[in-house]
Structures are given as C-alpha cells and as structure tokens.
Length: 196
Image 1 (spheres, rainbow, N blue to C red):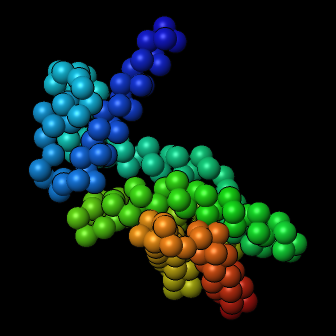
Image 2 (image 1 turned 180 degrees about the vertical axis):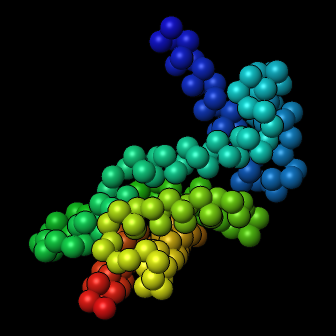
C-alpha cells in the first residue's frame, strides 16, 4: 500500500513538474492536456486520474507552493517577525539572512511566474491571504485598523519584491543582502506601528 501511495504521489508530482515547465514557456491558455501528457511521458487518461483539467493543475500547484512555504518555518512570517522582535547578535542575524535568502531562491521562480503579468491573479490573493493570516497571529495591532492593513500589504509587497528581484537578478546579486535589507525595512515598520 505504501509503495502504491508513493507511486501515486510521484506521478502527480511528475505531471505538476511537466505543467510547470510548459507554464514557464507559454501562456496558460496555450497549455493543453496533450502537451502536459507528452512532456510528462504519460497517457492522457493518466492525467485525468489525477486532475480534472488544466485549471485544476494550476490550483494544485499553487496550493502545494503555499504549503511548502508554510512548512519552511524560517521563511514563515511568524518566525521572521518573531526573530525580529528579539535582540540577536549580528552573527545570528546574518545566519538568519542566509537561511531566508536560500529560501527566497527556492521559491523565487514560482512566485515570479505566478505573480507576473501573465500569471494567475488568484494566486496573488491566496498568497496575500496566507500572509495576512500569519500577520494576524503575530502582530499585536488590531486587525480592523488602517495600520494592520498597511503592514499586511507592506509585508506582502516586500516578499513579492524580494522573490521577483532575486529571480530576475539571480546571477548578479546575493539574496542574503536583499534579505537583510527587507528585514531592516519590516522591523522599522513594525517598531513604528506598534508604538502608535
């Protein structure tokens, strides 16, 4: 039974990977089930055992990405903001920046494509809502205030900017430096808003 579950998950992942390769190459509307099946080297009927249609593949890919981001505690907003609230040595902060920058690189490609002009607007909403929920759990600012809305939007914008900037300049700049800059920006904003 375990072997069958592993095979099922491997096939699903293989289809998602094939879809992702096509998604990077062409507009979503041009991707067909036949193209995914050919890229994944599977029969068309195998595709339909796992997904109802191409929109379903995109939704599952996005949901998996949010789950992965959540599973990486160092990248999670609650962890990052929790770390920001503590007085840490420069050495520990630098180590944190290294971990965050490694994860920025890990997710930057998918965030870049999914939030680009030809990406999926629904994904932006999913990511924003996920980050807003984490903000609610961590920041001690009433949620029905302009300050909370502003901070949620700022954090979302910084994460999008960092991911997209890291992807676009992946051969030119060190993501650790970008992570350190955003840490300073968020900490400054959190400090000011919590004093209001």
